[in-house]
Length: 192
Ligand SMILES: [Fe+2]
Ligand SMILES: [Fe+2]
Image (cartoon, rainbow, N blue to C red; front, top):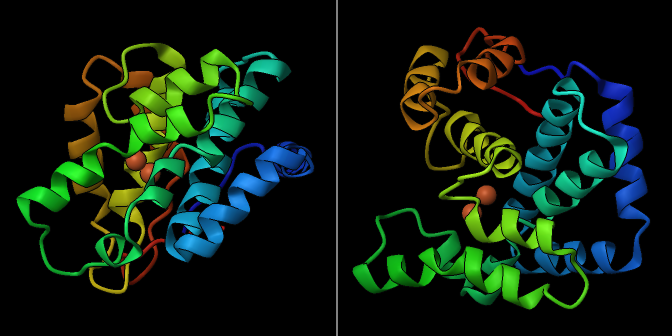
């Protein structure tokens, strides 16, 4: 189980973002390319918005973070969906292709996204600034906790251990994530 600290605010901002024509169109492209990436993007966006609200960022910044989070994996629409769904480990070449998705996404969306949002997309796997760290932490958290068809979500302690290693020195961020995680009896998690 998972809970948001600001559920109504999160929903309000998400629906506002989804009404923006180009955002909605880009999301639709993700959805038709790879449904799982689409669902992941929505969960990451909701969690990022929730964290951004908790950090008292301005409405404008929260919306920018939400938009970047919704589209953070847009570059994956340029990757063969069979690679994205592959259950066995990727070949070296496939790994190299997948690693390019942050850059490809930022490039694809450069005509309509503000620079700050593109920076988040470009760096979401190697975050340096604080705003990117929010989306990056939400992304990693979702990847570790959400059960896939081919693997279970990891137990909470393990998730927090990995996250603490990746986000060393960001104790507040880890605490905020911990607060949002409630263990399911079968140690699986569900995000809305
Ligand atoms: Fe990604
Ligand atoms: Fe992602």
